[in-house]
Structure formats: structure tokens, C-alpha cells
Length: 356
Image (cartoon, rainbow, N blue to C red; front, side):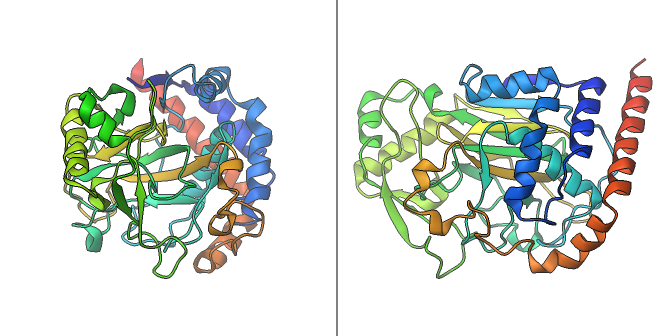
């Protein structure tokens, strides 16, 4: 099961206070200058949140952490229909809060070869992707780990819910909880599996083609690389073992319905995730998440740093498609921060009254 932390209005007030003191804006400056400024605010996080993040980092609370109530209900702009141009006052503030919290766990990064590069990705349904095996589809999103083919795959992944959908479930399954038969476990530890690069990467990028890997590592708390939508066994025995993993997941997974303000963090090395099928409306009211990838250390990426947005000035920033809107937003920085804080405080107060 996941570790659950529920924040109250006093906790949220402390988070908003920390956010208002960050001396930089997402997309306005070099990302790592911004991320450094966010990390300086760690000491201002409420004790309940700070302790939960510390325990998660130290492995004391398992490999899945769900933080509820990081943001109160507030006005969220309509869910976009296409990628790009998703930044506005509210979504930039949410990115800032996300970065403050996650800076206690590692380094936010992404892959330079992504088609729609951003340090923090938007995840929402897109009509043209409705039948693809992508986070923007409407079909069942297959079990997977993020970027399992890549040696610099994320250590941790985080999903921050801006707009929820009560009909949609996020599924989580720990490799440790799989009741695998001994012969299949042994097969899964062999490098007899081929995994392809998923379509979110650009053709011609350094991440291209397919790679050979093992699915499971040794030990009582194993790591796993699993992505059956883009993965096959290189031998009949390997394919049978891959299908055995699918069967074992059915009795081991946890279902979570993400609500606005929820931050779900999980260990991408040891935890698979998936999402239920659903019917988006494509009318601005659909589910909308932010996704962040984290590395605990630069060390494991030392052989592929040229493929990652992990160093200052490693990528042009901000994306050109958003430059004008970011300029307008940053020009209203102090007024927006004040208004955003006031909106959330009013929302918290109204929520408190409705519970009495």
C-alpha cells in the first residue's frame, strides 16, 4: 500500500508562503537557477510534509507516497486540447509548488530527445492520441515504468493532479509484491527481452531503436523494467515469463483515484503504473496532471549526459512557443503570487466552512 499524508489548511498556508518567496519563475530563467531557488524553500515546508518527503527519500515509508491536499480547490483553466501553450498563472504556480516539494528528493530532469520538451510535462487526453499507448490516450494505459529502455530512466516519478476525474483510476504495483513462480523469476532475470523506444521521442534522436534488457533484478526488493506495449521476449521462454508478470499483477496492484491537489510519488525503479480506460469529453473539463521525473544522483547518467536536460544551459529555455506568454506572466509576478495566495486562502476558508 502507499504511504498517505493528508495536509490541512495550515499546511497549505505554509506551502503558499514558501512559494511566494521563490526568487525565480518557471520558464523565466534557466531551469536550474529556478530549481535552486525552489530548493532553498525546503525549510519552510510544513513539518507534516517535510517529514513525509524525508522518510520517503530514506526508504522508511516504502516506494509509493500519496500527498493529499497540496493545493485547495481553485480555478484551473480549461484542460488544453493540444500540447504547448499550457502555461498560465495557475499552472505555473502549481509547477513551482511541485518543484519545491520534489527538490527534497532529487533533481528534476527530462530527455532532450522528447518531441514536446518540458521539464515538467502536462498529461491530458488528446483526441488524435485516443487509441495510442500514450498517457494522452483514452484506452487502458498499459503497465510500464517510465522510459525503461534508457540507462538514465528516472529513479522517481511524480504525478500532480490539477483536475481530476472520478471515473479514472491510476494503478500502482510494486515488483516486490508479485507472486512469481521460481522458473519464471529466473527467466525474468536474464537479458532476453527487447524493449523499444516509445513514440514520445523524436526520430533521429540518440534514443532510437530497441535495447536488450532483463525485466527483474535479484533480491527481495527487486528493480523492474516492464513495458509490454513496447517490449517482447527474445525467446519463447522469455515471452512466457513476460505474460506471467501480467498475470501476477492482477492480484498485486493498488488503485488510486487522483483528486485535485494530490501529489503521487513513486519509485520508478521498483514500481510499475498504469491507468484505466475512460471517456474524455475533449471540452476543457478533462483530467489534467503534471508529471515530473527525478534522479537521485547525476552519477548513474555520466555516460549519457549529452542526451539529458540535466545541466545548466543544456537546452534552450524557455520553449520558444511560450516565450511571449511567459514574458507577460513574469511581468506580473508579484501581483499574481499575491492573487494566487489570496484565491487559495479564500478557497480553504470556504472549504472549512462547508465542513462545519
